Length: 151
Image (tube, rainbow, N blue to C red; front, side, top):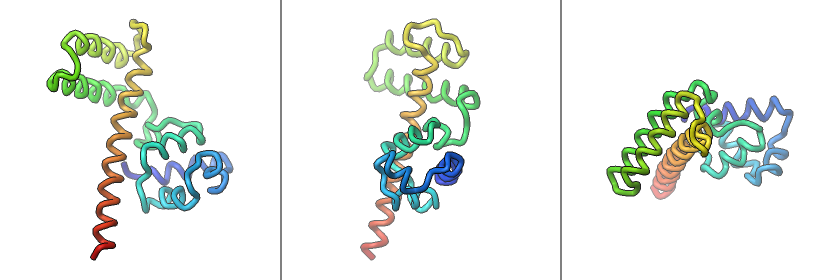
């Protein structure tokens, strides 16, 4: 999750937006955006989504610096892990898992053989996974900050 702030700042400056303008568009405070850009804080998932939308980029790019094509293999692996976990915990049936695996394969190959557009499903799954990871890291960062303040 390194350099999220640098990518935010670069895109904001490329679009000739001030911190205040980005704040007005996203609803995220100027102070928070500044902290994100200076890598002092990790943004929450809702902030990442709002900022990505305002900067007309993907959350994947802000989180990883990689475009969709570079992430196909990682997306496939992440989807397989999620599907397997769902199957192992009983959250999804074997039939659902099989269907999802077919969608994952189609998405990895760039084939749209299912009615649900697997490319979008793959991207959405990876984005959710990355956003969940970011929220966990932000929670850890908040806990460390509270611990320091308590000392």
